[in-house]
Length: 440
Image (cartoon, rainbow, N blue to C red; front, side):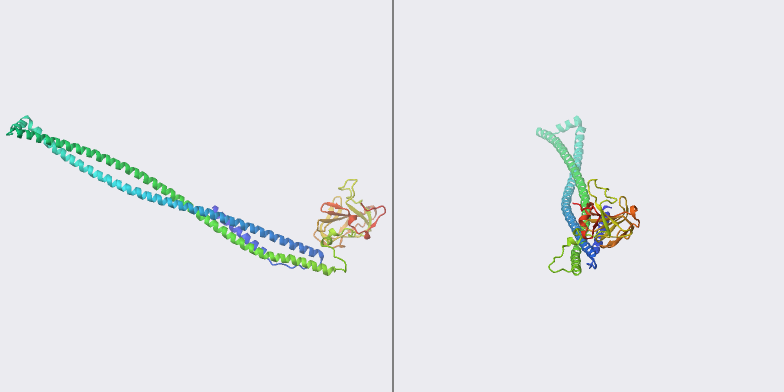
């Protein structure tokens, strides 16, 4: 189950990598824009694509490194398992040789036991035969009785014959006694030998049983190692395939990286060519650097949002965040009823709606972290997501007159920090009401 889950997971991982490789292998695109804002976005998109491509390349390279490490780790495990299998195989061979040796010894002990049993039976047969003969002689001797023995004794012609008769008779008795003692000793020796062989045979059988059990344990261990080795080889092959796929993806990404670098370079060159064609260099006058062509370089040259008189920082939200002794974050303009309110610089509308403390408010993003907030309108001419150029209409001032008409309020912020609009507005286009002074 674990092995199948691993295969399925790795399969989906490889499929995702392949799909990413296909997605990343798109050709470079040439940007065609007719204004500065479009070219800025083209450059930004090209650089962002290049960054994302490099990021994915690093991820693929890291994945490749991980798969290679996994492959090497599985190779080490495989090597250790093969070494263990060799050791187990050697032990199995040793146990088999020991088992064969024990079997040979057991057969030898069985033969010796059988031979001892045969000899024991032969001795017992001889003993029985001798016992019968002795029994017959004793029976015959005792059947003679006293008279028979006297007759035999006195039947001897001479004394030497009588002595010889008695000597032969005693010799016969000693011979039978010796034979019986010898047979008895042989029987004892053979019985001890047979018992010794039987005990040795039992020991050999026990040793063979243990050797067979050891062989079974080694065979089971060998089979388990083989199963693990088979799984390790499969995982190793999968890691190798994953590494091959990642290596191919890395090569494709490296090839595509050149396209993205060319794309970024083309976007920069197109922007530069458009800027040169649109704003040709004047003799003896250097062109402003790129950072000054954005909102950050517009200090002192921003036109007012509406035609009218600057009446100071007394708008609706002048006291929304600052303390009483701090200056207002914005300025207010008094204008004619229904006057057109314009964007002070190119950018993108990020909000157009009612905000408490501001009223009807339009927020425009000018990149570089700068925003302009324009409020006091009765009607919107833009919606969120619209791109505007400097001077485009964004709303209409109130048609009311007198106290019912709200002034047009303007704020400039760098992210969340307010800026003094009087530093940014072009003084040539500003008409200040009596008593309004520029803040220090």
